[in-house]
Length: 429
Image 1: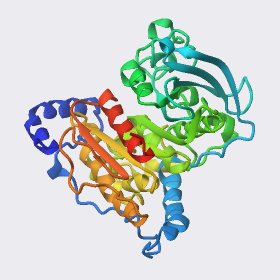
Image 2: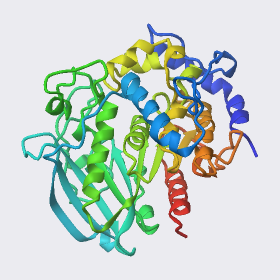
Image 3: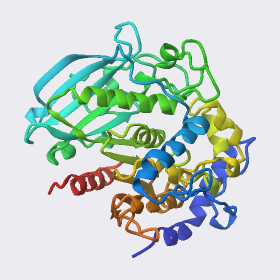
Image 4: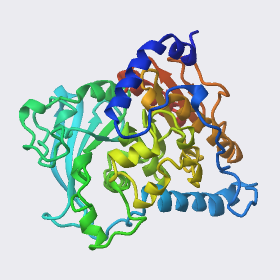
């Protein structure tokens, strides 16, 4: 079987061209490293050693002392501090079709009113439930990039009226019918329904628009009260917070098994899913697809996308404190293996793609590897692989991992593995 490393070497010329293109694109910044022998020596913080040097020796010590300590470090230095569930949170069901998609699904559309007010920040949740499965059903909850109407050609999905990217990071005209199904390849709905799972999705721009304007848009102004601190929440934390509010709704829906909701995300929304799973222990399974730097990949490897690149290109994603670690990753008091460990002992799946070196697939695998001791301490099988597996050869313990053929995308192959993983941990056949 061809290993990922072997294939990377055989495609070296191709990736050198891609690397050069990225270096040019990032003019003014440091060259992008895609060479393993150029990864600097680094020391990772031990997730099982307290800040005072005490060794974590029991599940109770992890739960009551070390986990809160790591969570606080991520809030302070990386993602920022999010508000609690708002007291005024409300839900408004505006569509409840029992025979959607040719009779395969019940379609439900719900507006989440984050402050309980129609004129306040809000997001539309689209939910498809399989008609052939016994209710309540387990669900996958995922944010989408282009609007709920983009995940399917279903004409009844309400068109998004929120900000949409025009390539320059500014608002363009509202969505039109021409955009229906534009992102459908990443949402194999028929496949998901056939496996007995519900799909719940929200457009991430409903929660917080993805450009930097001083946090004057989206949910931030409704909860910041005009004040921003160095550890105030950035966009990733806001999107993660929105996922928790979606779970608040799913807990009220009698057709959904809210104790079996997997949170899933791709790319920057994979970073978001990992942080949502760390902050909110109600999520039963946490899944990162091609999340890279600030997600599953180790920051201290300085490979592909880096902290400096993140902060320069996307200053709104993280808290202000994170900027102190641009080109100073060695000073960062946490790394991403600890982010994965924050979900322990709940199952976590991390997926990479061989053509997505920007996201550092090896760094993503190593995060899983270095999170494994926490899972073992808590009595699970952890990651059942000591070496990075070959292409399209998933490994599944309490931590799952695969690296697949192809590039930066969310594919049917990925979904099939995530459903296999959920079946394993939910005891489904």
